[in-house]
Image 1 (tube, rainbow, N blue to C red):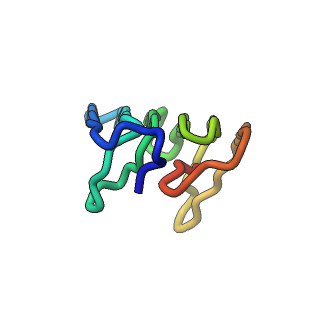
Image 2 (cartoon, rainbow, N blue to C red):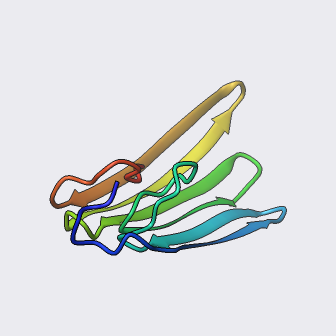
Image 3 (cartoon, one colour):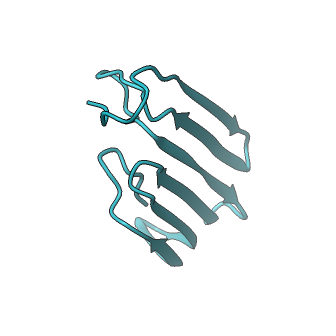
Amino acid sequence: MCPTDVDPEGSAARIEWRHESSRLVARVFGAITDPGFSNPSSTLTPGRTEAGGRARLKLTDTVHLNAEVIHSEDRLTDGKRDGGLLSVETKWRPLVFEVGLRRATGTAALGAGAGSL
């Protein structure tokens, strides 16, 4: 449902780029919806902006660098969330070890469909 002061018509757009090679696997995406957008089968709700990316870089056969970023914004509630993750992963026999840093910031509550790390 749309608030009564929002135009009941709206559109949405989404873009995605994927890359896979022997050393790098990456994905970047972005999506935006108008406040009046209404599509029950969509993963996006009205008035949303979503953007993010993920990458995994092979440094050696057993060491990988992982990175992830996300931006989520609800323009109807002025809620925002930004986050990022950077980690190094290593394999030793059947075990996998990972050490990293995660950071997230946010403002007012985001509605349904908010991105998460």
